[in-house]
Amino acid sequence: MARSGKLYRQTYQFRHVGEFGVSKSVSDPNTGANIPKFQAVKRLHFARKKQTLSEKAQVAGTEYADSIVITIRHNKALAEMKALFAKINGNVYEVISYSVYDDSYDSVDLLTLKHTEKIAG
Image 1: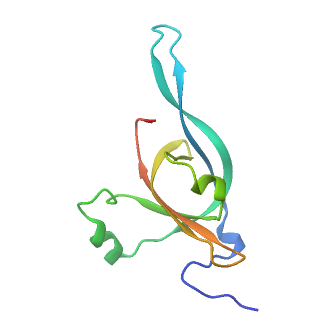
Image 2: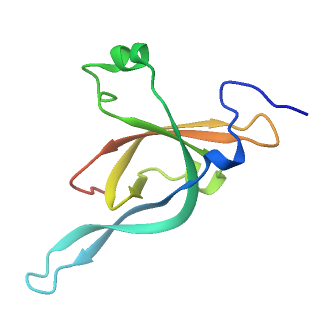
């Protein structure tokens, strides 16, 4: 039975791996100040979603400009987290939008990621 739909992804498309986690305060040994660091919660496979030119034009000038969109299999634990970050290929991204599509047995979540230099909690 062939599946079709805007959000459906073939299994082979989930070939990228990323770590998903939260900000955790760690004490600096030299100064004693608390520094936010990335703490991984889950390591998951994901598929990249291409953004069309019209989608890029719609978000120009907003917080969604220069963002990327990825698809993961629905994960209830991640969906309930407030401040979520993703670490992909050594780069840290803030999850600025988490959309859940859990209306079928092969449900997915769409995550909009924005590259960040600092992790805030």
